[in-house]
Image (tube, rainbow, N blue to C red):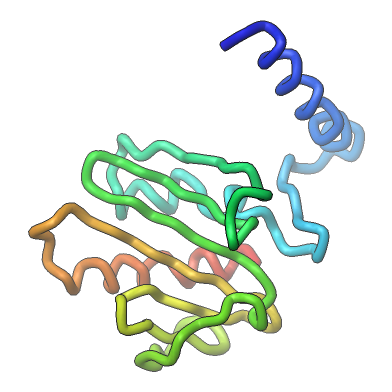
Length: 152
């Protein structure tokens, strides 16, 4: 990493860190609409039971994706990705209703779980290596979704 890249990162991180220290709070960030940043919600402790201890978090530039508030962890056996936005922006497809998760939850035909808590929406996608039991994908999504919704 070049010195100028390190300096840009340090400059970008300084205001949130100073705010956190000055306010005595955590470094949790929110979007302009007050929704928690996806990578603050999807944490290693939630991913490890699903993807394993070698999972690595990937943060992307919010301007480069259709869903700017998303986070991804990848490991040698799985990928776990979430998107958090207003429910109206999630745009979930029709799917099987899943009772007991949030105010409303559906599993889309492709196996991605969409859940709502109040006006906020969450998309959870778990992908395993080929050959993994197809039911394991949805089971993993169902197990992590309530924990993620609790952070919204």
